[in-house]
Amino acid sequence: MIVAADPKAARIVADFPILSTTTSRGKRLVYLDSAASSQKPRAVIDKLVDYYENYNANIHRGVYEIAARATDAFEEARAKVARFVNAADTAEIIWTRNTTEAINLVSFSWGLYNLAPGDAILTTQLEHHSNLVPWQLLAEKTGAELRYVPSDAQGNLVLDRLDDLLEGVKLVALAHVSNTIGSIAPLEIIIPRAHAAGAIVLLDAAQSVPHMPVDVQALDVDFLAASGHKMCGPTGIGFLYGKRALLEAMPPFLTGGDMIKRVSYETTSFNELPWKFEAGTSNIADAIALGAAVDYLGEIGRSAAAARTAWPAGVRAAPRRGSRRRDLVQLRRHPRPRPGLDPRHRGRLRPRRPPLHDAADGKDGLARDRPRVVLPLQHRRRRRRARRSARKSSAGLRDRIASAQWTTSTKNTFWTTTGIRGTLGISIASMRAPRISTHSAAIRSRWSLRSTATTA
Ligand SMILES: Cc1ncc(COP(=O)(O)O)c(C=O)c1O
Image 1 (cartoon, rainbow, N blue to C red):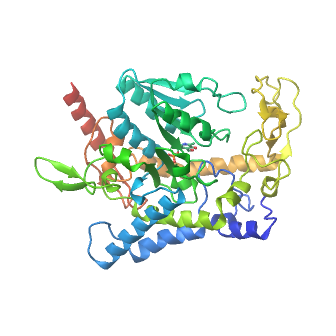
Image 2: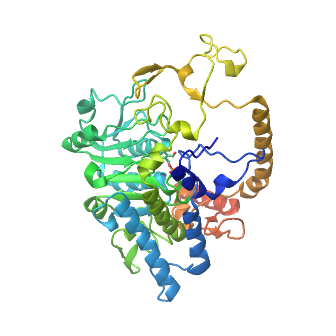
Image 3: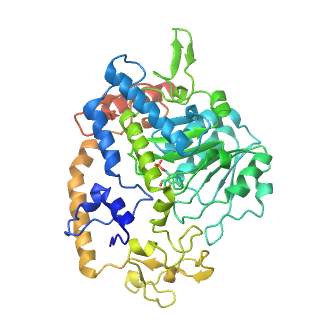
């Protein structure tokens, strides 16, 4: 239940059109899943519409008025993001689709050329799959070893053996804020020690950038990855920050148009930073709208965003009990369960979850003590019904895309058909979303056959 206790909170709620809509139960929408994807304020939505309605054109190539306007807005958004994370140079910000793509960029473009057997990659036990799977595959390809900083039962990293773990490590990749438990990595300890051991550091800032000031120069990170959709911006846009010297030394990730300076039949020279890493037509509208999101977060202040976050109990960053998080969400303690019995599972015996200690309060915070939103039975039934009907209505769309895979542009063919680099793709603008293309099953299978033949 949103109770907008103070006028500033009320103003913030009013900025988000979706928060004045109602659910299928006729209740005002309450949204608590911002860690997965945040809602968008009016300013961001308007910026998207403004681009499509008033200056929709490709960038970096046209000499007519709206093309110049689009190019300026696109590059201005990059400058805003650079200022947002305090990058020394705007060219150190590379647009990507999201955090995942930014991490993959580093894995392919830096990792494949800098790691060999005998080297190691260090990550932690608290990572999102986006910051784990790329390193598993990179270790497999290069023969490097993958190591993990362990975490304790409270979700804090255990650094006792950090120096041993850093032996031979070339890359440390870790999340700033854990997406599951919300714990904040002690970067002030890890980054200097990683550098002293000769490693570079990639920070997965997907969960931190929307909530707290993040200064890449003060932290001295080498790479930082983030997603627009978690910071009040659109989906399909994110960014990679990289120190200029590292980015300069790296080969391009994806290749094709826009990332080139000169092309002849024999050779190609690559564009300057940041465009060297932005092959094909970029996600222009969403980048511009992410600029508006950055402005918005700057206006409300990221500490205000953090204060209005319902952090889970037991988290180092959680506001103290009795703080404003209770203004936003009415929390009720769950009745104390009998030992080993979870009342949510109709008497079935289930193993108890490991205890969580409330580090913020220094109290024992067993799982049973964690706050939980309890809905009355009739609400739960209605919710189940709404879910069922949502599943039905999405079935049609699912059928239409069953044989297709979304890509941001034809340049990403690389990701959709294993092992195939190329520029296939059929525009399906008529199907649903703007500037998204796909491959038909027919083409995919033709190419799979061809690639199988080639491999054989
Ligand atoms: C910590 C963290 N890293 C990476 C990601 C992946 O973000 P995206 O799906 O936008 O690439 C997430 C998403 O939840 C996340 O929480």
